[in-house]
Structure formats: structure tokens, C-alpha cells
Image (cartoon, rainbow, N blue to C red; front, side, top):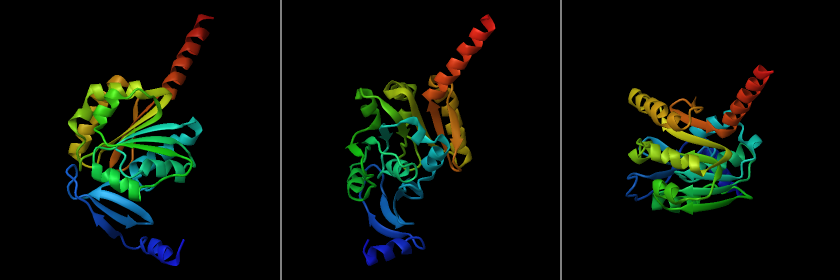
Length: 241
């Protein structure tokens, strides 16, 4: 790394440096900055991507220990500029193949220029609405991450039973689904709790939340479901003896 680049990186730990503002019909006010040696993408006060410092998924993965799961194929709905690949590679030493779905052409362009690109991984980006993608997709994935926001709002189509049913269909056996939701104020907590109880758990009764201090990551682990099922069968078998 050149001396100039080294100084720029160290200075970024002290001061967040604006890099560029971008025109976006999906997220007006979209801006890129450089902070703590990482690119930060956001709008207003909402962070869309922060490489491996993206708190919601960083905290969730630290609890889930993804490296032990043999994850290879990953679907990211709401790709941003690559926080999830950065977290899995930098913090968990994982090499995966990624399909990233992103509605905003501006974000796709930023991801191609500034996004994190882990070595030994393939990244396929699609500029399309996430609902359209899941309706048409046929491949299954070991890990599905949902991070779909326009500013502070999850678009209504992703609060539906149809969307969650598509997630189940696209999840590989023993797969893992993570759905990031805002959870910082009363209205967000009410909306997220209602969605979790009446929509997400309706499709995934074994699902559970991980509180990441401002966000709630809803988790469905198909491996846990199968383990519970095996334990029930073992209990029945013991009681029949």
C-alpha cells in the first residue's frame, strides 16, 4: 500500500471523509463516505453498507458461527455494496459464491467501483426488484440474507406471506435465512414484532430474533428444526420401549 493510501486509511479512523453524492430515483440523497478504513453507503442517517462493520449482520453472524455450516451459495436481497461478503470473508474466513439483488442502478454502479470483493469468490449482481427475483428464481441457497430498505422503510411487498414462502422455496436443506429489520424506536418495534409473530413465524415456527442494538435480525435455521425433529423422534422411540 502506498504511503498516501496508508495515511488516508489511518486518518479515516479519526474523521469520516465524504467521497461522493449520487443521483438515485430509489434513494434520493445517496452518499458514499470513507470511515475507519471502510466505505460507508447511506442516505440521511441510515447506513446501507459499511463493509465488515455493518452492525446488524456482524453481530448476527458472530452468534451463528457460519463457518461451521459449510455455506457455499449465498443470496443477498438488498446487496448494497457488499457488507455481507466483507463480513463473511474478513471476520469468518469464508469463501462463498454470491448472488446479489439490488433495485437501485446507482447502488449497483457504486458496488462495482467501491464494493468489497472477497478473493476466491464469485459475485453475480442483478439490478431487479427483489420480489420479481424470488418469484422467478429456481436455484437454492445455503444462506439467504434479506436487507431491503428504502431509507427507513421496508417496502410493503416484503412484509407479505408470499415473500416469505419464496424464501422457504429458495432455501437449501439445512439452510439459513436472516431478515434484517429496524428496531430502534417504538413504532419500529411494534411493526417488527407484529411481522415476526404474524408473518415470519407463521411460515417458520422455529424462527427466533437476534437483537443487535437498533435492529432485529430474524433467523430461521433449518438445521435446528431438523435437530429438534430428530430429538422428538428419539423421545418417542424411548417412550415406546
